Image (cartoon, rainbow, N blue to C red):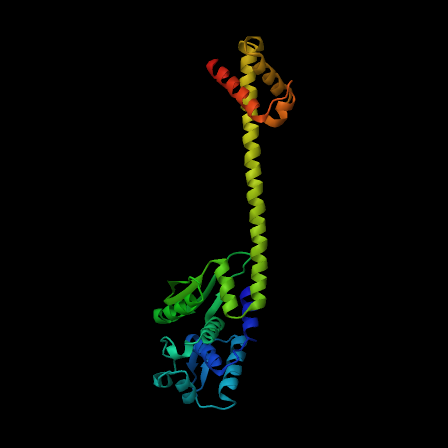
Length: 286
């Protein structure tokens, strides 16, 4: 099962306690997937069984076992034009439906159940809800922004898509929709990915430092051999000759280790100073 399906399976079991929240969630579903069938019944066009089941349960909770389509549409603040056209007029939902914070949560949950998807967090972070019109997308964007996320809108195949690509904001929105199990699963993936990235950064940094040290040691060896092959160690100051011989004897030693081989021992900065002087002498011998 995909991560997106897991989220929807969890949300299918989540219902608002208050009737107004249930109506808001139903509105979120019907706004994006609602239509009237040939018999004049208000249905969802999406054949997803989870969505169909949730739609039916919401109707039962809100209106009881048997209610007329017109009554439902009036409650959701839709005009009667969709009844004649057999398609929902895809405008933004009445603001009265999403005045309260709990209703905003429910509406977003319904919209995601109807037309949303979320990518596998092991591969990438992407959350989206596909809307019919820009007006719908803007309303959904505003509702998501209320919860301090930063969604964007893009047009795709004559539809308007509201999306998020920031992992932490997707976590926040899962919390908004009350998908707590999925939230924890996503957080676990994010933590593991961050740990891997941290280890990779550390390894890359250490590798770069090792390469830098090795390259410096190779250059030092070349300089010292040039000096030995031309003017010889007898013609340079004794401290420089001493460090030159130590480097030849211990080519893999760090500067700190190299200093311990001298008599008396010299610190890292002292070793570096002497090697710089050797490099300057070798430069003049070219």
